[in-house]
Image (cartoon, rainbow, N blue to C red; front, side, top):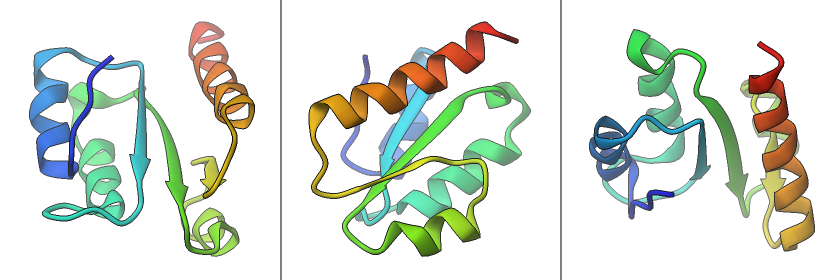
Length: 95
């Protein structure tokens, strides 16, 4: 598991070890969640990395704007998070 304080740091950490899943907050300093997701989606080396977003803002609008990315509404509980993580990782195993 890798952690980062913002999107730019996440990209640097991803270069160290390719993750199977990126869980990103939507509002972060330096590089926010939308910019991070856009960058991940445009880099061929990160094709296939699962994405999971979380935000305190209304995630219904985010789901509509970013189809295919599951979002958790803050505050959420650990079982809800683990359910989404398992779902994302099980989808990767099916490929």
